[in-house]
Amino acid sequence: MLELVMKRLISAIPTLFLVTLMVFSLQKLLPGDPITAMAGEERDPAVIAQLREEYHLNDPIPSQYFHWVGNALRGDFGTSLRTQEPVLQLIASKLPVTLELSMLAMIVALIIGITMGVLAAVNKGTWIDNGTNFLALSGISIPHFWLGVLLIMLFSVKLHWLPASGYVPFSEDPLQNLKTMLLPAAVLGTGLSATLMRHTRAAMIAVLKADYIRTARAKGLLPKKVIMKHALRNALVPIITLTTLLFGELLGGAVLSEQVFTIPGFGKMIVDSVFNRDYAVVQGVVMVVAVGFLLMNLLADVLYVLVNPRMRRA
Image 1 (cartoon, rainbow, N blue to C red):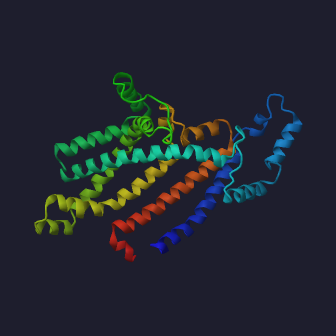
Image 2 (cartoon, one colour):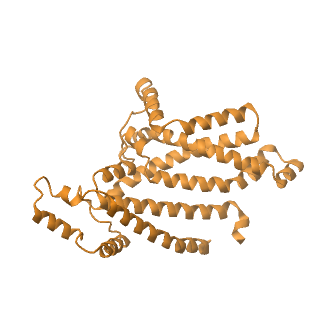
Image 3 (cartoon, rainbow, N blue to C red):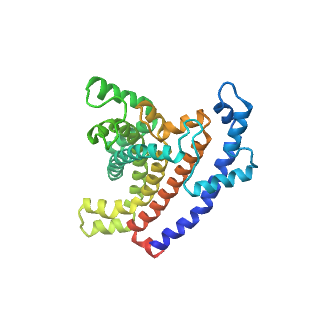
């Protein structure tokens, strides 16, 4: 297991290098000059020259790149051009919010998606299969922002069960924090559950046709044991892959859901940084998201080994 983890970490180094190169290069191609915006309306040439020197923008582009990468390796992603706060501090304040929202959304997605996928596969061709497929298609088709508005009207405006928007940190009030997160997590989770349901159904149908499933049934094992212990466990490999990828996407920021429910997470910060040409924040956020994707892929490899013993000998 340790050897597998080390191999994956070593293979991630070239990927991270390419990510840093692309992020830095694309940032240079963006229109506009953030230094001009920082200098204010008067745009004093002396102030602009001082700011360009302070942020190393007068250096050759390769020097700027290596300066940024060197600082990033030490955990220094620079300072926000807009708020003058360290980028790492901004990320540390927003990332836990998006992590919590992502984990709650994935819990909702896994419970609904896997349950519906197994039911659809076991009852293939019946009204249960058709009904779950209809729900999955609906979940994929319905826009998140529209579903969010509908849930706000139902649970907040009419029933008064949950707050319509806002965010309360978990450390201040755990119960109120959960209330503020339930609606956005449900919106994101239902959309993801539709995708998980379709993949779970396909994987289960393929596994249920295998010879060892037929053998298990011939031995007289209970149908529930055949499905849960033998079929579902072997169908989990593609589900694990999809789950880690979906979680990585959520780390990039559920922009629309965070906007609708006024959640101060990663997605809102990314949008604000792009519009304000706050390049240091954009670079730091993209790097954190890239590392998050790599960690999710590493977690998927580890889970493969734990779920499928045959891969331990690979």
